[in-house]
Length: 357
Image (tube, rainbow, N blue to C red; front, side, top):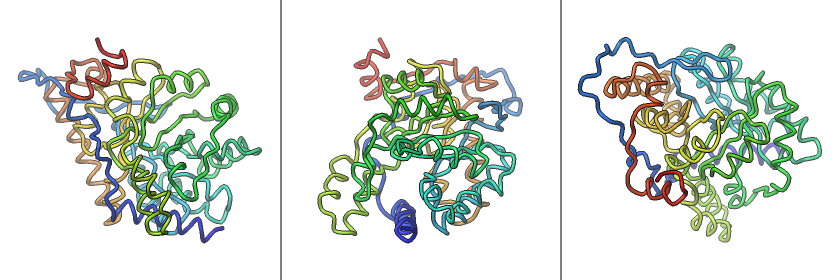
């Protein structure tokens, strides 16, 4: 069981790093334009990019999004990224902790993050099939306690589980269990998609269930259907490979899903799915997000060194600051309330959904 878990988790890392796993459908960020202010009437050094998330003050609305765990190489990745999160004082999400909940011997691969980030905001992570087990509430508490988490992501990865040849597709009753978690745990409970986005209908239902935040995980970045397609081909699982190919681009593009959630709820919105630079971060804030997460770009840079990942994040923050300067926004609240132009396929999507006139 342990060897199978390590093999699967290692396969996820190597496939994401070395195969084409990018969605073919764009995020929609190119359809979103911030309005240039040629006379910003502020000094760039006066721009404030700090924010607050569930009581934690962040130096910037940028997050190290959930990636990995359950394998020795993941321990090194989480340790390096945890150190970056601590130095920059930005949040970090961990990958699914199912492996370590099932086998405590693998807990160190996740605890490496907290050991290197004693004061940074860290989110635990567990999936719907796990919380639906008879001891699901206990499993969630174990995941939280394992890393002294500041919040819990319940990841909604029905697409990946459907394509993965080891997939677990039990989701019936998940909303009720999420409601139970939200009323039981001592930390905020959030839901997180993994590349297919969150609709306004789903957003409304989970907000009513008591979740405090939604990581939209939109379409346009890494496609986990694509990851599982490559894994299935390697294992000669032709049916699962075909599913991965057919559903490679399934979901709601990131720009659209941010608006879907922002226009229908009051929860904290974490934007992920193809966020690649600080201008993308600025656009997510303008669309209604509170924080934006990056995963694959940081996975690639941290494989070089923790210093490379830190340098990339500092560049992202400077790009965000530049976007704010060029729009005349002194702080994130002004960016959130500032003018934004939405065109193209994203506008068509939002109009058809009744979210734009």
